[in-house]
Length: 92
Image (cartoon, rainbow, N blue to C red; front, side, top):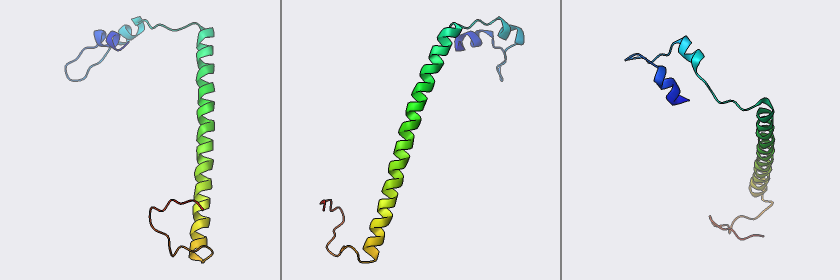
C-alpha cells in the first residue's frame, strides 16, 4: 500500500496526494465473515494477554507486601539479620 501511495504523491518539500488519487486507490479487504474471525482471534489473544498482566501485577503486589513484612520484621528485631551477608541466598 505504501508503494501505491508513493506513486501518486507529488511535491518537492512536502509530499502530498490528491483526493481523486486517494479515491482511486484499491485495497485488499477480506470478506466480512473473515474479518469477524480475525477480530475474534485478536480479542481472544488480548484477553489472554490481559489475564497474564493481571497475574503479573498480583505477583508484584504480593512480592511488595512480603518485602514490606520482611523489612518490618528485620527492623523490629523479629528476625536476626546480624550474620546476613549481601548476596546470601540460603533458604531458611
